[in-house]
Length: 158
Image (cartoon, rainbow, N blue to C red; front, side, top):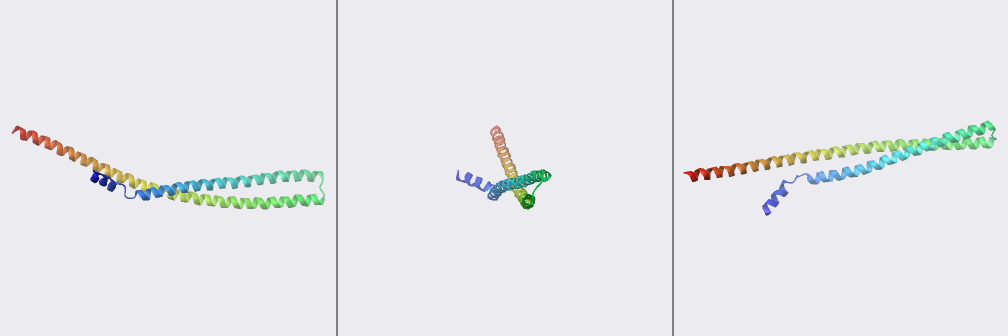
């Protein structure tokens, strides 16, 4: 019983711990990539919201300008539009950085997935070799058993 158990242990895929670790790192990279994508979507939404608000504010400015504005009102509109433009520029920069981080995260995920696939392929090949060796051993045992039975029959007939 102990030898059977020991032989099973030695037949395990030798790189199983590395495969398991690679799978854990892939899961971590998947989670991280999801966070990066979510952050990119939020940055894009923030920028789009600012652009939309600026367009609405600019339309109100034009409407108010048609009706007549004092110098102070005109300046207030211009200052606020300038602040919105600055906020939009900053949001675009944040969106661009987020896109770059997401692209890097995707590359990292692809790298880790490739690593898992490589180790998984090795594990499958290892299992195939074990299956082949096991089937050959079974066939050898069957052949020996059949040969013994044949010899017993022929020895008994003599």
